[in-house]
Image (cartoon, rainbow, N blue to C red; front, side):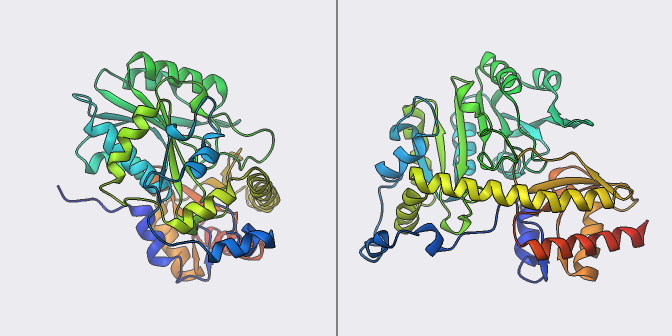
Length: 376
């Protein structure tokens, strides 16, 4: 079976370093090494670090730091990976390979399409259930989920806070999803990479607290501004599952890099973690005001349900032009890159990332409005 390219990631990789303004990023502006290690006393240790192989599932200290976010777990419940991408990949590979006669993945859409693509490319069947856009927010279609999940379903995959909408599944919705999934003896697989970048209020609830058969994937890339470390993880509801999935990373990357493990442990220490989360919330909140101002000014062209978390806005336009064609015109004519809704299976939508440079955000939005007006 020929592998289907991951359209969103391929398009970004081709053009993100070629355009003047890149509004495709879904995280916040990355921190520097100096900002991460702002305590000068910690810096000499970095130069004494031996760049050998680490413990292949992540050092105990790193996994203990990760486990602090998941009630009732320890280092034994955690598998450290090379980014959230590897976490999602090996979780899907494990679930499809070790679920006997279960070959279905039920996926919440719209969504980051990696799990969708991995499952299909490995030969499994994918069934959707959807977030529905209303005037007050995005909500999961629970009836559609109930109909989709069968005894052939290996897992239900969700993303909360959601990419691309920024929606948060609340406690009631998570409980309904978890109950339906557990009743069919399927796994709940929750991508929670944006948890900690809420626009307001407390940290979004985790699916980990609502299911007895759950895996959560995440990483340091989005909220913590550390995508270059390529450090992610899987948190599992039982340590036996974490050990079984560990066997799959033996065949992929072997282990996280020693430098990533070391710096990731620093990033997840209590004081640094709090500081990085506060930084993310500050950037998301400040830049959302810029986005909202622009949306209000151009409401005749484009509209959006405000995100509840993450530096992404999923905006709907009312023009007779496909999103792939529109974003290509924007890139070629205005030197601005954004993500077409087609990459999430949603036509006439655009995902605009607003977590990076403020001046480029303002200028990129101005150029997008110019193009939309020229086409209207």
